[in-house]
Length: 328
View: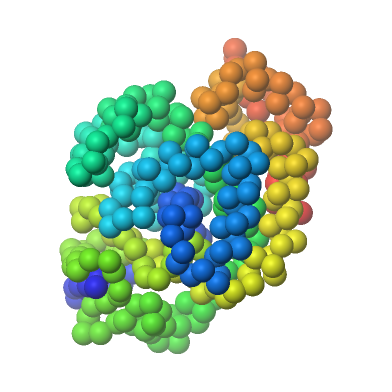
């Protein structure tokens, strides 16, 4: 059981994130691939994602990522730095900027009862190349396991947010918390919810952020380090059949992969802001020559524009690229 104690003014500081968090969805979806939780709801998704990972040659990538976030009572907090950060660039920038000392501490805790592989040791030491490889691996996994379901995820978030807003307007912060039952129980000035271990959390005047998650199941989850900004990630209500109901939207994401190829789709997703050729290469672990070939194809299709800034060539999505990426 998890207990979150509220002080006198903590209710006034309560926040609800407006969207899912990029890295929380990556980590929680990876854990769903390791278990059979909510089988009726998620087994069709598991089957489709495993097929997609195999097709794209990403089985090894997924295995390496699950090594970092196993289905266990602990995974490193540096993987989930956000409190409702949907933007992949901002989320991954925060992950890759984790201080070396914190990386060492969290990897030591992750591997305290087993041998640390060489790749994990390099990540623990903050080796720049390994961190870039981690960022590229996360992007490629997300493109197969999460991004194709963006439309149905957004619908679920919007419906949940409308319900939360109505509860808050009708009965204030306490009414908002009461509306989360049965996932959360609000009683005697504290939140109680199911949790794999017995744990208490003191807010100490810090705002608690509630973050909706499409891939969170069974019970809400929080960070392990009590010194980090308080966050509680809670499951969105889903029913069996959501994958069939959302197949037109999820299919649009998969059709985009078939149309452009996974790598060009990733390049297009990356270019929400001006990015240099070398920046794309570093983010996706590609050679600059390979990036130039992909950006040429995307530019000739009118999906990106390219312009010089001094000695650098910068690339950014066009309105057409934005519309295609969003299925408009």
